[in-house]
Image (cartoon, rainbow, N blue to C red):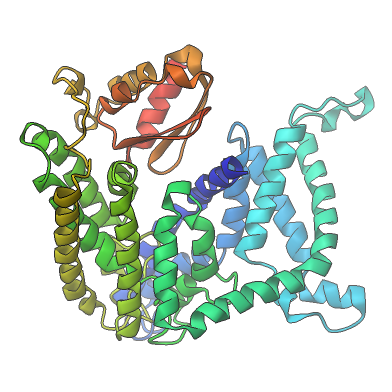
Length: 476
């Protein structure tokens, strides 16, 4: 079950990666026309509408992206099947169709059937049908529909059955989700803090994407992300589930990186700097935090718990203040600048002094805990890696050499069952866990190695993971 959920979390990143494009266009549009949001300028209107075209159809992107991402070989047929499922769900369970079926006014829940949850469910159905039926054989008379052509047919059949079940289940499920969202909203800043804390705790499993869908999209009536950029939210409230991440990602984590660098052993300071400073810059600019978080998450779990708590505190404090900023991808400098003129932005510059305070707090706490409890953060590990082993580094851009080193540490080609990757991690299924040499893998210059099970290894590479994955697949 955990493996399935991790694959789902990875698949969600494919459609989420479309959001920066929407953010750039919306951000530029709001900069050009900050008061009319396109009403006073044709160029601004063009950009705002173009960005909204992506943002307003995220559920469809989820259906296609999850379909492709969850398929065995990332085939586009599975994405098409996800779209088929989505079209059927949103048609069969629309308010008009339900009213026609029942002869009475439809429950308000069916007015929200075109949401991210249905998009994800459609993608799962499409990919499952693809994985199961892509190689099916049929009698000669029906051979045209054999193989991948049968996937859409199977998807349609499964979706009809699922729609019938959702006809009865969806009103109750939607009601529970709305109640959960309202419960968090009703707690105000405390709820924002709880969300921030839980968001970071789920990072190791990749399940934080599922939690984000509740607050950022229109799954439980919150829709914080879309309302922030569209201006349809409530000024001072909309953005409270995003703004609190900026002080942490832009300032707090870089402060933690500096503390880990200063506490690294003299012999390993240069090595630690190459990893930590690059990861800190990535967090500051783009809000992609995994390369830095995974560098200490398993080496010093107590530090990661502190990091999660500090994130919750940041979200709590920012939610109390009249400070709101938002993002389309993550809480980095790029999204911060683009959001300054967004409709729901409120005193966004307040996040900078708050962030500077968090930089100091992160630095002080991390440095104290590392030295007091002798925590094994990067540059303080017990293992000694020779200078020769460290010649292979991501900083060299020699991705083939990095992949070769990782493959050697994984036990060679014979030990690999499958290779996949998400935004920052290689996800490898292995045959013999005893053949894996973590020291050799780390010598490739990666941020960390994770062993979720005896048949699974995750290598935290960073945002350049796609290039390493491509080279690794070539070698296999």
